[in-house]
Length: 375
Image (cartoon, rainbow, N blue to C red):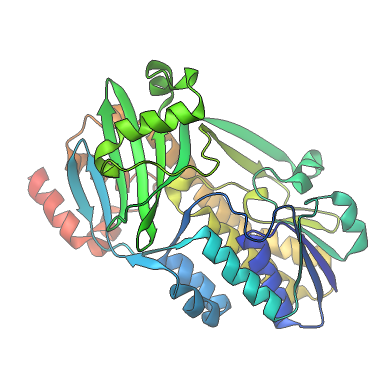
């Protein structure tokens, strides 16, 4: 079987690794438009649940990646300077560049061919292989070549955001909500090396207009963000890496495959950052597609159908959760008028996945504090 994978991100590389490892005779090539050491972004988060999925597919790779990860067990929610600790969480984070380097090495060690600096997503390549995988991200050329065949739907959200870094380690995954000159701002920050953190700055649409951000260039927006988030940044500058302010886009596809072409990761469905790592979901797509192909062998149509049938309910559940979480963030200005403990409770319940019973079981210290406040 000859397989071509468009995109050498985590989804494409992990899928290539699983397919080649399980059957070394497979001819597998990954094509990538960037150089091997190019990456955009900073750290990526993987929950304990995500690591368990990875371990089910290949325990050795999780043990290998954990050597390069930062881990923590709490989540912090800070509202206008008051910190609420949510105990019972389990998170790890790793530099996106390190993650890619490790996956590149694993692929190379078992004979996966990776062609860098090549045009990614050229659909004509599908004629030269048995399976052509679109793993080329939210701006997928593969998907966009056949929008009607895939049933592509794109929705622009209201809030604005930008991904930065900061040379400051945070003790936990932290959400910092700030009111500044009548505007509503949120910073999402977490460490991914002993001395470096991701820092995502976000604001609602009304703040974008009233703060003057809409009239600024991105360098001016970065400098203004450093002032707004001066306290959580500790006065340190934000690190830029193509940190463009923009709307987040939700991309969905009602059909996941077309002829011998199949989509995974953000090419298939973008995952809003507020419900967890898009990297986790992309890798889980890779695992699901690998398992489907293992089960169906050379019957590609049956494998693609199995992949969508078994994976789609999980993606649909998370998509519904994302829609509720998006609505919460787009209304964060009114939410920020709550007492910090009520705000933290409302945040934890926002997706509909968490229940009071589960929160009681998993976060007993927070719930004791919340009950004392409520009484």
